[in-house]
Image (cartoon, rainbow, N blue to C red; front, side, top):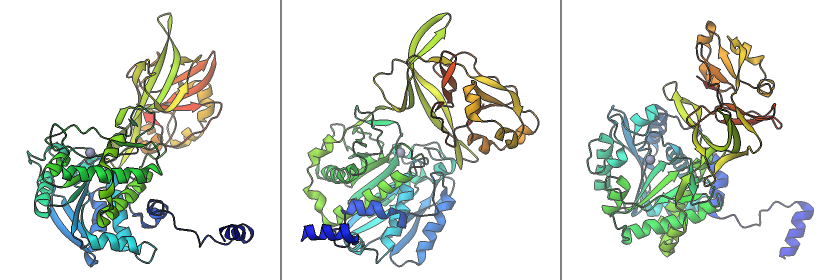
Length: 493
Ligand SMILES: [Zn+2]
């Protein structure tokens, strides 16, 4: 019969309606686009952007919206309650203002839970009948406003669980006290530069079953965190094999995660990390969507209790820092001496336009022997000499001027720097320059003329004899044999 069916499919291209649906994690990943909150497209959204998403739910009988307090600067903090089951779950996001990935996923999950007739009704019923979920998206709206970790007082809210001097921390503590949730999801973002253990794999998602004491004891509350993480890890491995990490479980007596666990709530810390080619973390948002929904399902049906907590320890720890770009074995000529070095370059995000946008600043952050670490991108520069780039002789005064300059042609001639004219240049839209590929110099600025060292800007040439092999501008490397550009690499000095 099976053989016949296969034959039918091959011959008549019968749609695969007879096939078993994929497993839940896979189905959720495949359908995320349908539920993705379309008004949030990148990470630098603000408090005002999520208010319509909260208020529009006031008319929805399946949700209960409440204002649970205000931030230091007076921005409202809201809670959205769904479900009517006996297992209580609290999930808060963005207690660090520049860690928004799970806030995006929270609204996707709400969209999902409110849909129907899409093949997921059974899952929805399981979750909403057996759990009550309290979502608190964007706990630190003042931090989000400036796209910074800390709140408006300069407090790291995750070190204020006992001190309770920030209004946002008081809100979180009072909610724990009044709801006494059985489960808590503390949703963060971590540096995109952790490796999974000693591998070169960038960690996309990491977990922590927070420790409630220094000896890192395991009671039944913490054991359940570990079991849930084992289940969540297994689902994630299908999509990001080898890219799930585990945060150090050193006890932090001031942290909320550690204290929730101590206060009797099974706490799962989720950290969204990095994924190559996903600077706005939209793929990681999708992973959060899937991972949290499958976690809610396993809480609803109790199946997590069959997981072996010891497998938690098998998840590799967040390891050494990865660099965005490593250049290996470049030759440096300095003071009539010649030597070899590796260069570790990172591109740091710098906010502008009221933290609604950012540009990258690429710098040489490590120098010397980097054989023990990895780069997300690597260049073998053996036989190539590190040389300073040249300044293009004519200043530009408009975007029109810039359009006449071909990055490839200029790079080949060694020109990496372009001067901005002193007249109209001050009116050049900086945002457009960041989208370009040159290292721009404001009037009066001059570039480093020697080869780069530790701390220098990531702008230089790698040459073989007189031929430019690579142009590196602001930490982005352009291979001149296989030249291609992408947007958003420019820098203004
Ligand atoms: Zn955080």
